[in-house]
Image (tube, rainbow, N blue to C red; front, side, top):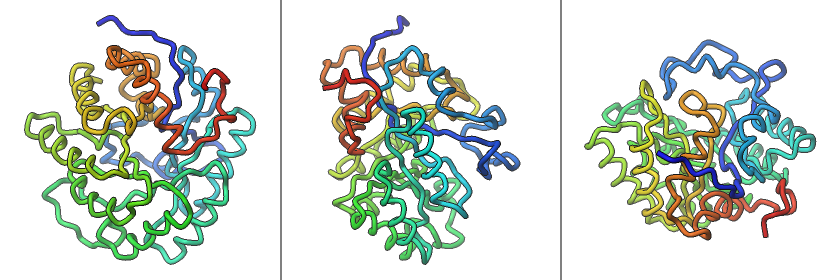
Amino acid sequence: MNLIKEKIPIIDAHHHFWDLENNYYPFLSDKNEENFFLGNYSSLKKNYLPKDYNNDAINHDVIGTIHCEAEWDRKDQIGETKWLISLSKKHKFPTGIIAHAWLHTKNAEEIIAKQSFFKKVKGIRSKPITKNSENEKYLSYEATMQDINWRSGLKLLQKYNLNYDLRVPSWHLIEAIQIVRLIPNVKVIINHAGFPWDRSIAGLKKWKNSLRMLSKEPNTFIKLSEFGVKNFSWNYKENRKIILEIIEMFSPSRCMFASNFPVSSLKINFDDLYNNYKNIVKDFSLDEKHQLFWKTALEVYNLDKTELKKAAVK
């Protein structure tokens, strides 16, 4: 395979920073989670800051980034936002922030309102409780997508003009259609391609059918990111097929490439990842490429063009 090393502006629609020396992230600071979706992640237990990101992305024209909440200590949900803004003032990145707020708690509106106060906060990611497999039963509906309190918190996002980043395993995509319809005026961004973890013929068919149904909801968008699979290497052939199928479902105007770094580094380096992305869409029109690599992210997250790192974008 001949990799395409095309220079094209990039807004990385999903990545993380963390400072383990000064901040507390339970999944990184404490013992490993047994069921982490990519397996052993011990190598992530080190600082990942703008200088590290810039080193990883040095061969690519990254003009902006969107930071997604990184499991910061939930007792201080605003703390991560304040820290990220201080980073942005010094290093230009991140350009936008997807912050955290519990949706089912009594103080949900208080936290959402505080997050919305910050100009760089463009949305909320609040992971609902999910099942570990399709056939598992809920032990409780609390904090799941079926929880009335959770749904009430979700509806507050329209009031505060915030997007919702949806992160659920593929077996919850059909259930998520109900959620998307509760907030028709809120942009819902599906994280990580809807997690096509099951790469069997039957597994991919079920993922694809579910995602296609979700794509019919006009307020849905999707991140082309995190194609790693537990116990397997990054598979170009499989991931190419998956990416092209998603773009066919959603169109370039509703898709955005993202790195999910440093998490994706467990399976692939940044340079190979974005060169793979570029190679996969090499036959697309220039307008479509611009949409996929930066324009969709710019528009969906309503980023300030004047804050982009390079002035080359018009």
